[in-house]
Amino acid sequence: MGNALQAASERGHDQVVQMLLDKGADVNAQGADVNAQGGEYGNALQAASERGHDQVVQMLLDKGADVNAQGGEYGNALQAASEEGHDQVVRMLLDKGADVNAQGE
Image (tube, rainbow, N blue to C red; front, side, top):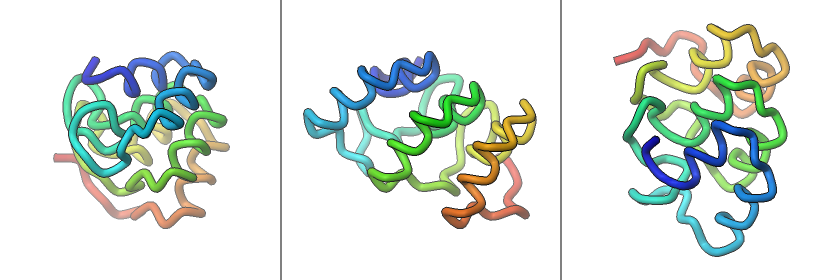
């Protein structure tokens, strides 16, 4: 797991995610942030999307997570959610402007 936020997001621990965000997790910096590129998932949004944790996905989106960030095993959050059939998460990502034609790296 790349960082604490990715770990909490993957497991759907919304209270832990909120604590990390409340403590100033920077949504656009390396480290415990929603756009960090590392680990199995490219970022926390991909981790939450792959697991279908829609509450966590919404928290990350509200903090400015990049819906089109590339990295990790799944390529991007939309690919991760689509692969696992999480239709609610797919809708959320599309509503935030996820690129339906983006390809994984």
